[in-house]
Amino acid sequence: MDETIFGRFPEEGLIKAVDGPNEELNPEQKAQLNRRGNILFNQGDTETARRIFQTTGYSDGLIRVGERYLEQEKPVDALKMFKLSHDTPRSDELVARAAQAIRKMLTEEETT
Image (cartoon, rainbow, N blue to C red; front, side):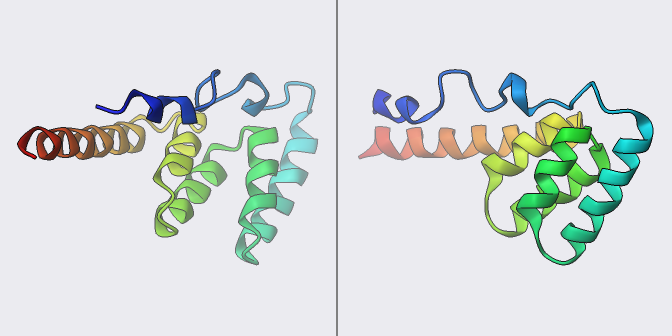
């Protein structure tokens, strides 16, 4: 197996401390930002909406961003959104699919 593939991942992993919600925001500020994020998301500006939802910790918004990432065939980015939103079923499903893909690759490598 090619061990250099793991060198592509950031040392701190998929989720960094700065990816968590800003604890200094009050509920009114969060609500206002979440409304803005929803508008942007609905207009197709997924990345700006993602940054807002990560800042506020808005789990429903993070899940919708994760689903959009899956539609765009970005499963690693989707997994990060599901982890940040604490959506264990969706996270576990993606991890299981990744493990299955890795098993398949290893099996194919062994047979060649």
